[in-house]
Length: 177
Image 1: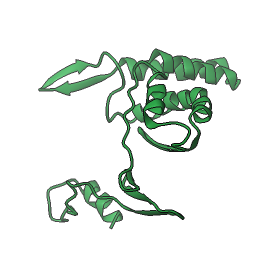
Image 2 (image 1 turned 30 degrees about the horizontal axis):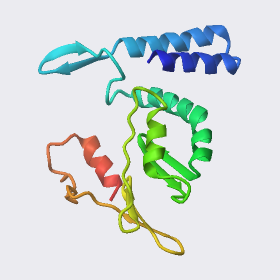
Image 3 (image 1 turned 180 degrees about the vertical axis):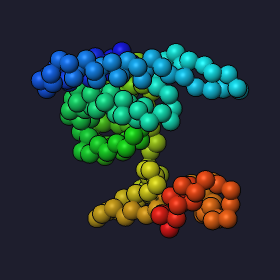
């Protein structure tokens, strides 16, 4: 969290943001990251490390940190491992690379050296297919075929309008139909 604060401070300074605005934004960051409370078994606890899961600001703060790491490490790793394409959504990454020049174990090892608090795992394609987010990508000799991927736990159940769920949940589900 201190590293992310330093990244934000440097970005503000490098973009010539006026000092008062810089201080206000850093105060905002300090307030959010120091008042990290959550409830467990009826007790209010203070989170000692990291960001609160589900907090509205956690995703934005994590994104600042991840973009900084990508900016400083991705070009080198892409060249070293002949990575043709890099796609990331939150914490899921899809890499396309030439297996004649490198292998997934070497790539994973180098990614895991980027930061001591980050651990990358690898899922390999099987039968020329890999699942990424909610899609299955099928590699053919001439192109890619993309289809919807459903996890084994998928139920295809919607929330009935007459249920006791909050209305905003029902309307959100209805928008996706």
